[in-house]
Image (cartoon, rainbow, N blue to C red; front, side, top):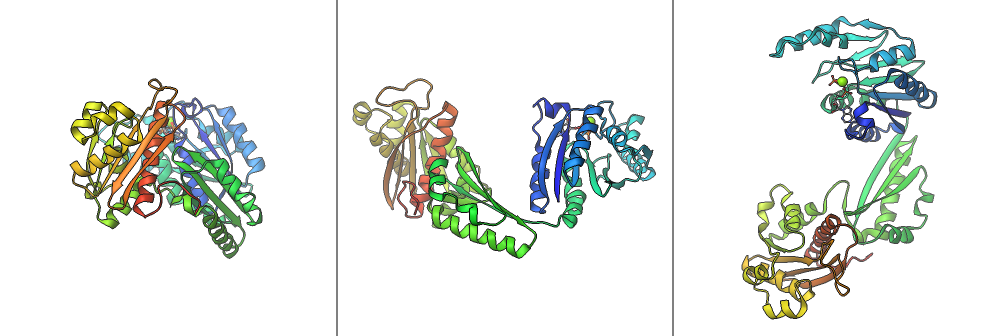
Length: 418
Ligand code: ATP
Ligand code: MG
């Protein structure tokens, strides 16, 4: 079954509201093997909604529309759909009762206009809203389902997961499996060169490259009529991909690099201290984003000035003068200093030029040195990150976490295919 998702609302069309309802529905559909083949956004305009619905019904096997089911005059979805499908609105007594019961429970007196939410297209099946007033509406239009769901995300999510998606799953007729491998340290083009046309001989599969400053995620989606065939292909794809690029895979699914590092530190029973300059605490923020991080984060030093580097970390004034604050020598001494002063197992440091000013020919904006010091040894790497100040800082933090991940598993800190 290939469906179209239509999100309705001027606020979505104008870009002021992020279309998180689409994100939620698309993910839920994928997990339920319902293929989302189109996504349209349309404003709160009856004619446009009617036209969009007709177009969707001409190409898709079913349609989910969200938004505009409320009681205010800008909520026109029910009326627009009723007109487009020639299913006049009728009062549904059960929904009216539900709305009145909710009104009694609420401390405020609600205007009678809320009762317009009990008007539904003739012949529709209704799903009672567990967290709001407007019900989910299912219309069977010439054997194609048209599903209307309210716009507020909690209501959309409750009705979609309790009713709409299970209903579609039962009728899907296709099986879908997908997985994501998260890589770090190689560019998209390098990964592509290494993989070539690898997915060509995976029947029914697609391979997507999803780059961001957290790395390149590789997402494989396999669909087909047989669950066994789909699973076999997904397993084969997984095996082939990991044998080619496994060395730069740090996690699967949505697991973040900070979680991987956290697990590695907990497994070793190690505590960490960070010394941050250009990232101003971003690395520590990432490390402490993980619940339970007090098990391994001892403290951090945000040492922006040379004085702070000397006073708090014991960096040598002579090396600061000779090599500059952004240098391998200073990065190493910062990591060693953090480890020693905090009396922890591993010290890590970041010093660099985030820009937009402060660069030179020898050390341009984006130059960052990252060092690690532990009983496993000391390591330092020079980097040159491209992008804005924010990007340089994000990349530096993510790179440091990857270096830590590699260091803690006894690997060289430099990314490598194997
Ligand atoms: P209400 O009874 O609240 O008016 P409704 O079904 O009419 O519900 P809308 O008026 O379209 O829904 O949207 C209500 C709120 O839900 C919006 O202000 C917006 O914050 C949120 N919303 C609507 N559509 C989306 C969407 N596609 N993604 C994320 N949020 C949305
Ligand atoms: Mg509304």
